[in-house]
Image (cartoon, rainbow, N blue to C red):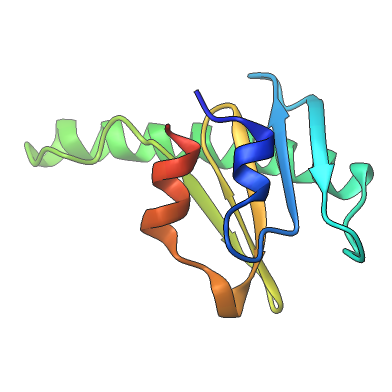
Length: 112
């Protein structure tokens, strides 16, 4: 299980958050000087849950139709914006400026 304080210690993380399976923001941390706020993080939670559901449907369907394996289960989702990227799993997420995104490191911490 991830820890918000530990996630905030990752390089350049602007915000870390935890949410319900329905996308409701449960708790969050925001770095000083960040433009993020709880409203933005709540929206990211809902976007993340919706996209994880769609990606799961696609991964399961692809595996069943093609016989190829390794797409399911979906373990995370990234939303890449113009200035920052939000990376989410099924319960936690972080926001990082694009110039500092290390997907493998962040997903390892989120799934930790």
